Amino acid sequence: METESISYLEKMRQEIDLLLDQYLPGENLYPQVLHKAMRYSVLAGGKRLRPILAKTSYMSFGGQNEKIIDPAACSLEFVHTYSLIHDDLPCMDDDDLRRGIPTLHKKFNEATAVLAGDALHDLAFHLLAGSGSARAVMELALAIGTFGMLGGQMADVEAEGKDVSLEQIRFIHAHKTGALIRASVRIGAILAGTNEANLEELTIYGEKIGLAFQIIDDILDVEGDQKKLGKKVGSDCKNRKATYPGTVGLENAHRDATLLLDEAIAISEEFGLKDNYFRSIARYIGQRES
Amino acid sequence: METESISYLEKMRQEIDLLLDQYLPGENLYPQVLHKAMRYSVLAGGKRLRPILAKTSYMSFGGQNEKIIDPAACSLEFVHTYSLIHDDLPCMDDDDLRRGIPTLHKKFNEATAVLAGDALHDLAFHLLAGSGSARAVMELALAIGTFGMLGGQMADVEAEGKDVSLEQIRFIHAHKTGALIRASVRIGAILAGTNEANLEELTIYGEKIGLAFQIIDDILDVEGDQKKLGKKVGSDCKNRKATYPGTVGLENAHRDATLLLDEAIAISEEFGLKDNYFRSIARYIGQRES
Image (cartoon, rainbow over all chains, first blue to last red; front, side):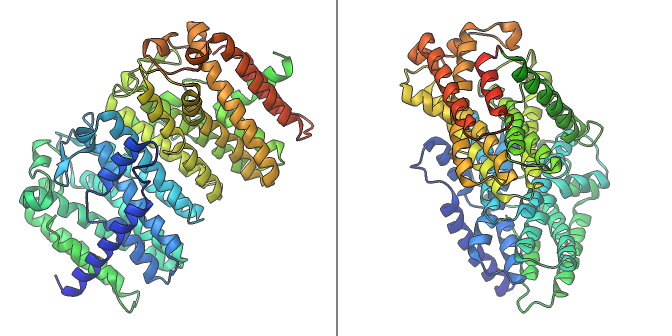
């Protein structure tokens, strides 16, 4: 990956890590157990892709108020973390390990994991409402509800152990992961007051990188390095999960991901930005190892 | 109870039931299982106190747009139902019966109950954002987060089996149930554009009826009729829950509830409304049997 992409992503990731710490309730505040649990899961690390996308969109389209975008960007990571916590529960995927450390219900207990997920879900709307934009709130709620992320989650559960078509796998990915990634790009732009034409182009960019991101996630579960990933590889196969390479083969999966990212980059070039960080993000997704 | 109070509450409850049905996703829409589960829990009945409070506030202070208040009122019932679904889970209170029928995880399964709760939580913010008021969204998020409902829930879990002081039980009740009831009153008024002085008075009204409501809930768990309640009585005692009568005795609990409701009615009289439905609601709470 070129140095420019790495340094932008790394600088942003560090900045987001500091913001997340700042916007999470302190663990000395009541109810301490819940706040500790929320912090444990959020601060365990991660690529911070969703907040980075939101901030990149906001700044690329002229947004300048950090008090608006910073809490909004964090809200996207809080939603992402809430979804992982509930996904990992024994009644769902029953995972023991996440980002190289025990999952929340393993470290604390199930009741705390349910409530900490709920609390992060809620904190996300609290912070996003602070932007003053009901439209941004609506955008997030739609992206992660039954017609978005939760619908994809349910489709994923239902597809387990079954043969699925390419159309079905695309539905699962577009909803389970894609909807929140698309919303991250859009919310940054909405808060910056971007015009509708750019917003529509950005939406397509978001859809393409979202699908590519999940295809690569599936590929890494087959080819990846367990140490870098911080979770067991081969778990999709073991859990008989519907995956993109499982449906079209590894070679076609690689090819489709590359194609989607190239198309996303082409769209981003048309905005005529001085610094095209949308390109940096797409390249980063294409080359990530974890 | 006087006829006026009964007829207002009953008329409103019927209206809210229709609205809830209307604002819930149809069970023919994908993901059907999740939508069926959401509808099962919400449409199982209930007093609909929170939406009734929101609509009463809105209309009492001059609000006239049903397209604003109706979805907002429903959002409060959806949040209430989400909290009950997650509360009933095996890892939380492990309840089998709610409103006279099996709890959601018993009727469907645990994974569906977790996701349906999440979906209702989310739908609430979607609908409330449709009012265009980021302030109303913020109000709800704060009321049900770790400094509100979830904090009370955690305190309740932690207090199980322990001797608790009157101060602690008031904290639990004010947060676990009180915060959402207070927010329901406030959100209706905020959407109607009520002035801050009235909003402050309404807040005190909301706090008083909220605490009275929960004290009476605790009393009904001791003295109530299982058939009318639709759930087992004596469960607080069995689960060694912290309750108001358990702390101050039944007689004092009755006295405090009556006093709180009288005070709430006195506050509502000062608004000088032509029809004081806040009084009807307070009287209804004092005389409810389920």
